[in-house]
Length: 118
Image (cartoon, rainbow, N blue to C red):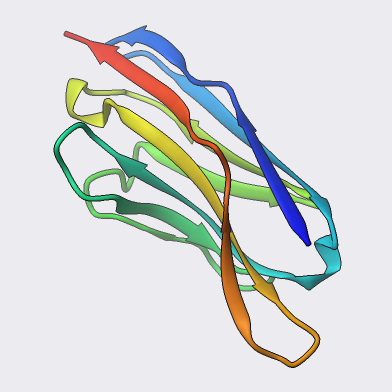
């Protein structure tokens, strides 16, 4: 079993920066791709960025060039620069986890609030 705990959210002015972190614990050797999603009030949860164990990350078009995803051992990070009010959302860390039978499932963190004022 894998658990994810996020940290680093907060309130920032437009143009500012925040760095989110997500630490995985438990059976971390079963983790494949990790990523960040976000959900704004009244909207569906959307992909922000993902990074596999190897290979290059992918980004949503709305954050490309402003956000950088990275991972180091059991931790996942999201560096967010030049934040905009439309980036305001709850940000969730997620990990693809493989069970002993070879099936994949998703594990989610509890979310961290990011608020950007204009």
